[in-house]
Structures are given as structure tokens and as C-alpha cells.
Length: 240
Ligand SMILES: Cc1cc2nc3c(=O)[nH]c(=O)nc-3n(C[C@H](O)[C@H](O)[C@H](O)COP(=O)(O)O)c2cc1C
Image 1 (cartoon, rainbow, N blue to C red):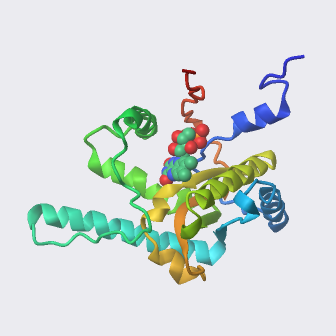
Image 2: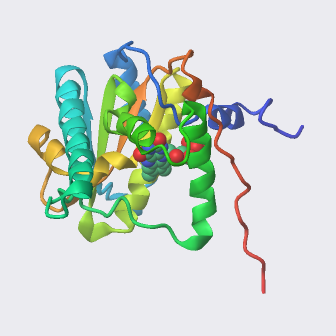
Image 3: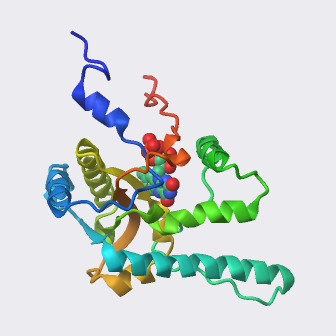
């Protein structure tokens, strides 16, 4: 028998994981979170170095982080607005370890534009509506108000392998979460700023902040959770 997404449990699980951008208030029970983290250890790793670290924020700590990130986001937008009237205004430069907002290579831009159109379309935000875009984008920095905010750090001397290991671990974690009814979203935008995580966690020397993520229970009534990003086939190279 050929296994399809309908008959293969793994295919069905993998297909059902979607980046989730609105969550209910429901907390993830500690034992569920522990089981998800235990499953994530099953990911392969370069020389088994596991050169990544994960920080999890819940409750008051997550709330502090949301407020801190929200302030940074707002300060930058306000500075841009003031600069429009006064060119001497200094817009704060984000202190992240990587340039999160860099321009994508031309061949990759159509995919980015397509997913952005889908996202803003669901929120009813028009192309030129900067305020609307800011309102939607701000939801990223609070990790969409998910009960668990995650932060992933990779050893800079083991790049690119440490980043690869972290990605493999994260997808294992997301699939384990999904199998337990817990939804997720990677939130790379959180890595725009570094100071908030340093204020809340002891990050070892040499570890750079690569991405955040959100974990929680999807809000079934939020239209944004009906978003379905395209899943084009893996591009296989032609043989010579
Ligand atoms: C490393 C990484 C960072 C991401 N950062 C964000 C983010 O900051 N905000 C967001 O809404 N989605 C983010 N995403 C989710 C992608 O937009 C999403 O995975 C893609 O559109 C495919 O959709 P799917 O996950 O629902 O299949 C990120 C994904 C990855 C892998």
C-alpha cells in the first residue's frame, strides 16, 4: 500500500503543523512541555555537539519580555515618525546578533512577497497602510501572546552546523508539540534585538541569538490561523 498524507501518520502530522499566529490563554502543562523537550533531543547533531541553547519564558518573565520588546518596537517606529519631520532625529539601531531585516536575494523575494500578501490580506491591511503593517508586525514581538516564548542561541564558532542543528531540533520540537495538540511559530523577528534576552537569561559566552519561537494552543476563532502558506515541492537539481 502506498502511504499518503491520509494513511501515513507522519505525513499527516507534518502537514498539520502550521505557523500559528494567535493563541488562547491556556497554559501548557509542565509535563507536556517536558515531553516536548525530551522528544526534541532525538534530533541529529553535528558530531553530537548540540551547539545550541534554548531559553523558555512563561508567566511574569514572558510578560516582561513582551513589554520590553514592545517598547523597543514602538520606540523605533516613533523615532522614524519624528525623523520624517526632523532629519536630526536618531533612529535607534537594533542590537541583534544578525541583520534580521536584510534584503532577500531577487530569486527568493517572490516567495516572501507571496506570504506577506497572504498575511496582510487576512488582516485587511493594504499595501500603503504603514500603520496597519506596524500593528500586524508588532504581534511578532510579543510572540503572538503565546503562553511560552522560546529563544534559540547557537555557538558562533560552530556555524553553520550549530544553526543547522538548532533548526533540526526546533522542527522536532514543533512536530512533537503538534502531536500533543500544541501549536507553534518560529519568530525570527525577535532576534532583531539582543538586550531583552540578556536581561532575563544567562546566555553563555560565544552563543548568538538566532531565532525566537512561540508555543501554545491555537485560537480557533482567529482568522490568521486559517492562513495556509504555499508548500512548493523540494527543488531537485537536474543532473549534468
Ligand atoms: C527561522 C524562521 C523564522 C521565522 N520567523 C517568523 C516570524 O518572525 N514571524 C512570522 O510570522 N513567521 C515566521 N516564520 C514562519 C514562516 O513564515 C513560515 O514557516 C512559512 O511561511 C511557511 O508556513 P508554515 O510554517 O505555516 O508551513 C519563521 C520561520 C522560520 C523557519
